[in-house]
Image 1 (tube, rainbow, N blue to C red):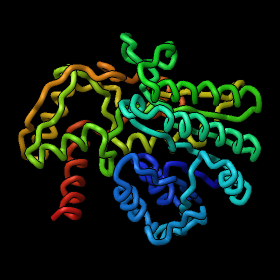
Image 2 (cartoon, helix red, strand yellow):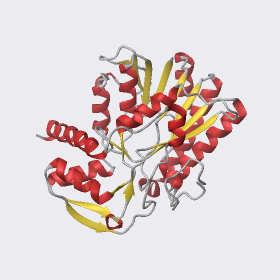
Image 3 (cartoon, rainbow, N blue to C red):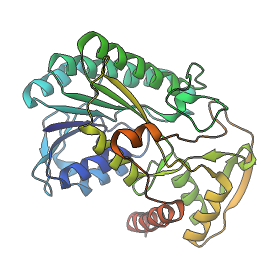
Length: 340
């Protein structure tokens, strides 16, 4: 087995590459290392898996990890079809996990073209490379955002997802449709993963846990939208990675060979409870500023994971309190190392 992981410098991608490398699987990670958020965090993640910043080249040449000899990294953007095609031909991957995407619900309203390029053009490039190189299984990140403002909970894969409330959500639904088409036309096995509010160490600085932790520790106010009346199915990063790895060999067999799974904690938590647990873990009280619901946001998310359990016996193991403690410990150490 030889695995390509795109978005390897991202939050989920970094953790996945590390987990696969520890299992001694052959892994190649790629990322364009864009500046949507602080690139130093991305380089620090890569350094954690033995990829030194000084040995990352714009040419697309790969670098071998100093920690995991079975792991390599190359700076490649999935919208660059020629570099992608060359990589596939040279490496002869058996499995591809696509975690590369322009992330962020709110940013998609401000910068729609970035989402079309990465989430649509880049996704088609990967599908083309997979079908021409006879990839055994293409696993890709979708999102719980495809459920839009659905009022029925928990969200099931059988629910209609025809009303996305952000461009980001629309691109993720488009990914599911395109993957289904390639499974139908070219017999390419594809599996889409609808992630639910992933959090944990090395998380994205534009997401609530990092935004809140930064503000709380610095004595600055946090923005609480919809007056805190929000439910989120917070899912710890290790549980997400566990689900991805379990699905890697769960190749769809029914035609068309296209599966969709929710991956979540199946235990929605009120936003104010999340903030309270984070305050306790950090040992400081947040200064709260209350705002109305933002465009593109939804009031609640709640994953029905029965389908995933039946397929690979997946069940989330990390409760919120345990996950927040682990996140807070990492956050305190990381910020101290960078700011103290």
